[in-house]
Image (cartoon, rainbow, N blue to C red; front, side):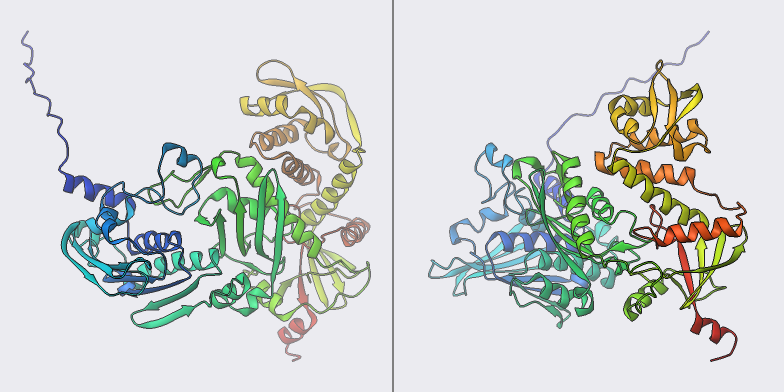
Length: 570
């Protein structure tokens, strides 16, 4: 039998990369597009203590980015050193890594930018008689001069990725690149309301902020005066984390999270946890698919942060993530609940809903059969309704002083049960129903861990359950409200919720919402007229009749005027 002869191969030698190749690789990690250049240079300007900055973009920054500031400047004998890798004025020892208070410290921004573009920098330290300029092409110094300059720094970056055509061809169009750069500039204008910012695109002024230190003034400049009128101030501290800023009122939401900004110790960061925490502060008060506006500042001890997670420094890691989440949620919830309009007495007619809020609500209606005249019920109160009947075993039809209401029977009942359970839980009076025979419930490993870790939470909401082996628990009693539901299914759903590892107060809210969902009347369930009347009357008495605990609307309103138009009476 012949065997195939394997060719012997010599392994490739390990060699050190050419410095130019290494520099381009490093530059690719830091500089991805013109917006990356803008971000790095803006952070340097801010760290240099500037009070004014002017940003000029040509072709969205693809052809040219120029940033002028009135900061400290760079000393003449340190200018060339600033363009060497790992050179920085922001660190001196390894201990400084535990207390980062500047916006950038990797020491790679300027050399990375210079490695993939042409850079012309002019700078002067105010204490020096003359300034200096430096011209670099693809990282190589071409020219240096000494000349008279005002204090501060002007840096111009052109021909980005001219020496990396493969990278340059992946840049998007000038408008897309401009939009990305503008977002960066907008965030730093919000983070530094005391900084006067001017942005120009192809010679045209896009916006200018005054540097008055007023956050609301900056927001008005960037997003419009109408938005500012819809914002609530937040300022609270919890778990050693201070949370401050502005968030939108309940009636002013957006279809996306594009107007949510977070700053940690002055650094603009993106972190999904922060977005979720902000929206959890509105728990059960947001309509599904809508998102609040927020400009949120977090003050956290630097030793509890890792800002060195990503080469672009846009991401951040928290040592105490749950406490940060809880602090944001608490601050937002406190402000929203304090400023929420008090519902009128049951039976009173609702005040006229603000026209602007109504216009925002039009976006929520997607049914072409009904059209934009179908609006969620007024935000501030719910009138007494006269029940007319049921449609499709899904909706209760009722008449009010301002039109016809379509009430989602399941969502409405969820809100009623959730409010009842919340009251009972606060008073430690959740009614419990003992099972005729204990039930064995199979659960996942994560759910079992949740039961062992949060047994007190499970007991507080009315369950008598304990582990019975590695993958089974024994269930002896359930909350009385769930007597008509499947005990095992409900317990499994609750334990899976707990396995998500949320903060305790949030866990209770989520569990109560899940219990309310399991216990509520279902879509497709036929109700008698008396049952419908009772459900609507109970809904009128709840704290937030317009949404269920999960944020879905409980009702929509077809106004009388809209119906008249549909029938040609107007």
